Image (cartoon, rainbow over all chains, first blue to last red):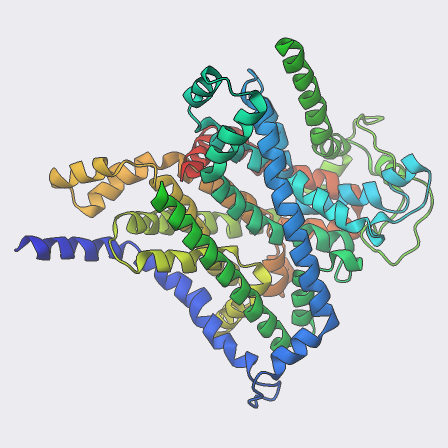
Length: 282
Length: 288
């Protein structure tokens, strides 16, 4: 057997390791996604209606509110849930004997969602702990503070996991870099921006991906805290789509799923290209 | 000066950690309170999650120490309402197959992505990442259509199969296999080891900690599933404990603490047992 042929055969075997996963992903995600596209261009009786579903969707106030809230939530909560653990990681990094802190900060991952909802409810409901402290009778989840509570809940829940990632990323920076910098007379603050921030970048990728996934999952808690119709500042796309599902409005549901998939795909492809380019430069 | 700084940071972090652990402590200690005491602390409400009902003005009171240690919640949970054992078993029946599928399919595919040479590789992986980050509500219709086509709606399989094939496992395992120096794989190739041997004796052992991270993460995530059972299961006898706890919060909150402890036991065990591996694995995945 010629060498080229052997290499090709090896490569085919290498590909075969992907087959179980490819089959499953195609069967349960990709193929039914294209099957669902039938709903996007038809009305409920199955007639072709061009782009009317998109027109309907974008003119729906609920959809626009939900998109705006989701966007606002992600742009505020994700950077915070990356920055705060990074800050704690930098504080924690030079301290000895603080390993137990990570374990404690991961405790929200263990608590059942219903327990978390229960706890936040008891803090923020009209006769809850916060109302008691302030001696008022406000249902905080029905005020404009609901958004801040949601962001806080998200950061609180994911802090421990992101901290483990941040500590790992921080540990990857060789301490020689700091020694060289201090020989050259660089100050602590400049060191932080010139070394720590720049060399943390590779670790940021996975922190970002995980925070992105988890920002959608916060819906579980929000749903338990305030049901299908929460305060309008925390009415997310997930609420909107879940309600469409409940009403059996497949047209709206699939069209919005298509829009979300499209936006995320464009965003992720862009992110992927930037990531590959930065790898290339390195 | 630096020492004072370090100590003040430590004090701050310890205070912070204490605040953090309070919810867990409350759940744990409240599980040993009598149902009457819980009713007094949290208001005698049978509709804690019901938002439309008027609430009485007596404020919520947290207490960490039970007036009298009582096992009545556990007694009711285990002996008076045996269906909770079934719900617990439903959680096990849903979670274990998903975790097993993630480990097997994920590590096979991650090895494939590591050694396969093709210009389509990164395109396929990019599609995987897109599918991975989509919210459940966006994949709900595709998942539903396929479950309907296969006739598995209202069975555990309608949840296990889509979640078990989730690209998340491939992503985590690939991140951890990136840490294997290519020279090791090449060296064994020269020694005549085929792909299967290299997978079994090099790639798998060297990504053990990544696998531990994967097991803990997917276990935690599947154990806490809410949306999937609510959409795919009509029959409430099939529901896992995570969903039942939510319903419990709507009804009898006297039981919610003991049931939560019951729910948390496997996760706490897994976290404590696997934490070392977990952290190593997460470290490797952050190396990229």
